[in-house]
Length: 159
Image (cartoon, rainbow, N blue to C red; front, top):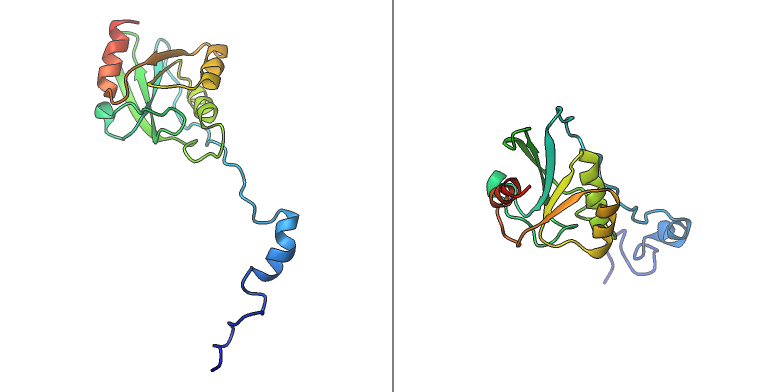
């Protein structure tokens, strides 16, 4: 019995060869921490207000508020005109979804970079709450599964 050419035991292929012996000790191939992508949003006209909500789906006003803050799949950015009417809705993937640590703070930093002054969520951790207080961001807490439309209605009725 013979082994196929290029395979076999003891030829340095089972553990990655050279890269395994020297590369890992030199830091090659180690995972790099992911940083949130900078917001690509438009500036707000005077008098407008931007609200961010962490949502589970991309269904516009029918999107449901996520029970998790930092690892919510999407962030809804809603612009309200000076009269409190919805001017635009933009739902974007959460760039901090797959971060290894500090997803709540990374999500908050992304939201702050968009210019939002209010966040709608169902559950926010204590470190993130402290971070939001330091930056003067208003937090509206709603039960998980509430639709974005219901949350916005609640917000506009009780500013």
